[in-house]
Structure formats: C-alpha cells, structure tokens
Amino acid sequence: MPNKNNCDNGFNASASGRIEIFDALKGIAMLLVVADHCGMPLLTVFDYFEVPAFFVISGFFFRRKGGLMIEKLKRLIVPYFIYNIIYMAAWMSIGGALTPDYVVNGFMWSANFPLWFFKALFWTFVLAFVFTRGGRCLSRKCVSAVAALFIVAGVILSATGIPGQVLSLGIAQAVVALPLFFFGIGLRMSGLAERIKGWFAWRWTAIPAGIAVLCVCSLLWHGALGLNDANIGNAAVFYIYTPAVFLGFYLIGIGLWKWMADALAFVGRSSLFVFCIHAVFILYLRQIVDNEILLFVAVSGLSVMAAAIAGRVPWLRKMYLA
Image (cartoon, rainbow, N blue to C red; front, side, top):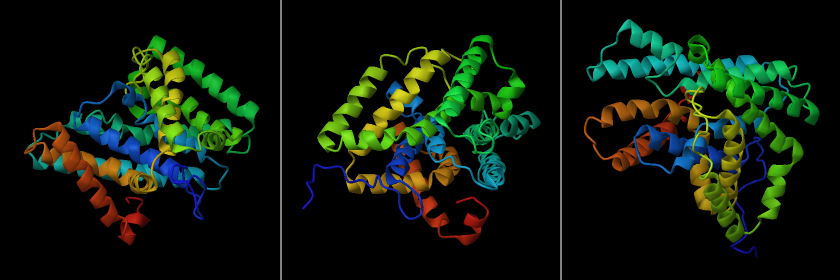
C-alpha cells in the first residue's frame, strides 16, 4: 500500500501526452492571472510566475511537428481576434465608448484587454521554429546558444527601450520570453524535471523546498523586468529570477494532494478559454462587486464553469475557442 505522504499527482504522461503536474501549474498560473486582473492583493513573487509559466510549459512540449505554425495560428491568433471582438461588445454594453483609438489599441497592443499574451506566445513559437529549423535542431548546444542569444537581446531591448510598433505586435515580449521557452525545452531534454520529482518524492520535502525557493526569490523581485511591458526593469535579474520562481512552484506542484492536482489540472486544461472569458466577467461583475477577493472568487468560479460547459460544445472546440 503506497504511503500517503508520497507524491502521486500524475507526473507521468497520459495516453494523450499530457502531464498532469504541468496542467496543474497552468491552473495555478491561470488563477493568479484572474486574481491579478481582479485587483486582488498578491505576493509580489507571484507576478513573475503567472504568464511566464505558460512560456516555460509551452517550451517543454515543443516538438518537431508538421503544420505546427498553422496549428498555433488557429489556436492563438483566431481566438485572439474573436475574443477581442466579444470583449469590445461587452465594453459597449456597459456604456463604454468604442472609439477608433480604443479599437486599434485593443487589436494591436491589447493594453485594454488581457490577451496580449496570445500574440507574444505565437511569435515565440515562430522564433523557436525558425531558430531550431522547424524543430529539427534541438540539441543541447543549439538550445543553449539560442537561449543565450535571446537573453542578450532581451537585456539590450530593456536597456535601450523598445519601439512601440514592435511592442504592439507582441514581438518584443516574444524576444524577451524566448529564453523562458528554451528553459522549458531544456527541462525536458536534460531530464531535470523528472529528476527533481525523484529527489523530492516525499510531499513533506517538496512543499517546504518550494516555499523556501519562493522566499529566496522574493528577495530578488525588486527591479526584475515586467514582461507585460517588456521595457521596464532589469532583464538580467528577470532571467535569473523567473526560472527560479517557476521551479519553486514546480516543487509545490509536486507536493500537491491528488484531488488538488486534479482540480488545478482541469483549470489548466481550460486555461485558453478561461484566459479569454474571465475579462468579460470582470467587466460585468465590477459593476456590483466592490471587494477584490469576492470578485476573484466569483470570476474564477464562473470562468471555470463556463469552460466546463464550452468544452462540451463541438463547434466551439472545432473553432479553437474552448
């Protein structure tokens, strides 16, 4: 009979190729994004896990695959435009002014919307595809060289300032985030992710170790780069700090009880839909809910419920909207 203190949260890949612990980490990151957009007070160390986690995990699952760019275009850019239109309609329905500047700014930069991440992740896949020759060159030497190149590029961009057009298209964030993407590739290629799981096979070592890492990271967050702006702060600190924060949450994820991992994994698997729809719920609920914590509970609950319903609608899945 297995010891209940052993970690058994689905690290091994399922038949579909999913790894539950990474789905759970996406779920944690997604809930933190919702909390952030609700204005809920957060520990500052969380700020550099929310969105970067998606880049790291996307890198972990990056493979050579035919039609990859078409697939990412459908799964990221199509929802980006459709949900921006939905958000604009919701904005108008509560009396917001839909000016030309608001529309252009929304589609080009999304400063008014939480979907800038979709463009940045798409361009990250494009850059990774180009620099690995379509995934054919994924040796450790190649991965290390490309990551080093883009760390230098990210430091230079943050030091010299980023042209507004590049920032608007999401390319600047992609340049800055690409080393995180390659960090994810490195976690898989080196087998480090699985080895860490073996080193911290006991729940009561994994969780304290993760908390300890986050506590140490909290000493470094001052001056770290803000990925949403990609031209604020110190990129050199960001590239040390952010992978360490990810590993801290990864350790905590290893120690999760099975029921917690399952619940968070469901949110993670629904993260694309939740990422899009939660902003609409925030728009409406802010009209009647003043408390940030209550707003977070309501928005996250409604978003996850809506994702569960949408996931059962074939045409939404076919259009990459759920």
